[in-house]
Length: 160
Length: 202
Image (cartoon, rainbow over all chains, first blue to last red; front, side):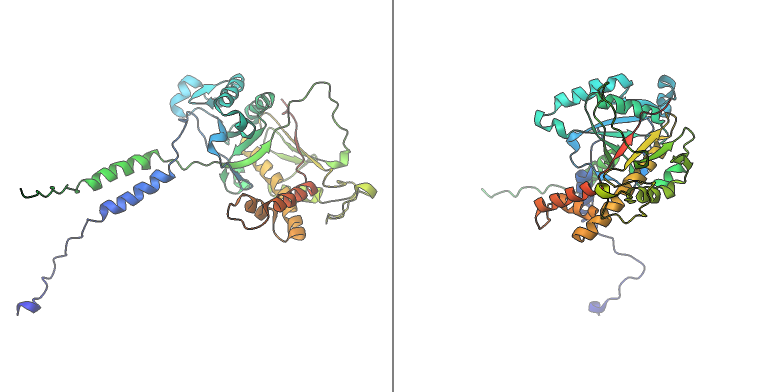
């Protein structure tokens, strides 16, 4: 009887891929929403130290970034292997920080200037001398709110 | 004339297009780490200002030398003990009369700090000190203040200081935010963060 035909054994039915676009779109939307476009291309090694007493910086547009660390391997020939400061896609000297801060301030609306924060993204291997110089420059231009950007973790692990 | 049905668009390549976009966003995504230890730098100093005179016992000297060794009051110390030592110093409350501290639970040692509002932690570092070590020490010192503030907040308001700050930022918080702000100020007044940093030594 044809009604009770035995299923052909061994042949798997083809899996429907009709919902594949939906799944992919879902992933796509997730990444589109979660993406923060990188503002600067890093030219330095930037392995941030660990800390657990951290605060989150919410307003991304009110943050100025100063990077520091050893130049990464492809820039080592031109920039040397001592720790350097990076501002806006290029290496900079300590005395250029003031101009950088003033330029950042000029680009913001006047009433927002008191809320500007400077985020220091400094590689863990850097000497404090460089960081001290950066802080001195920041004090001189009255950019007093700073944030040492760190990763989340136990601070004791920094010493290893 | 018979209405012609619109020909159906072939959606077979939609998945490919979506994949292309997906891969683009996957590659460009960097989950940014935008959190860290917030600090306030002191304003630039005028030359002829006399530094205020502090009692030696109210200063807790933390020093990092060029070999990344930690010296607390000129005695070597492991990093893991720093938090406890700082808490002990701040919470000592050894003052008398006007400088007495009625909320401290410390040992009331007369050779240590008088009052948390007077106690200053002085952090000195060398130019050769490693940044990671410096951050670790900063973290421990901030943690010491947070521990004490949490304790006081639990005692006075029944919830931790960290929770209070979180509530203040929370848009869904039901309750009096102005009052909460006042309470936070009160705790900050009891344990003010007095962390001084000297210019690094050459």
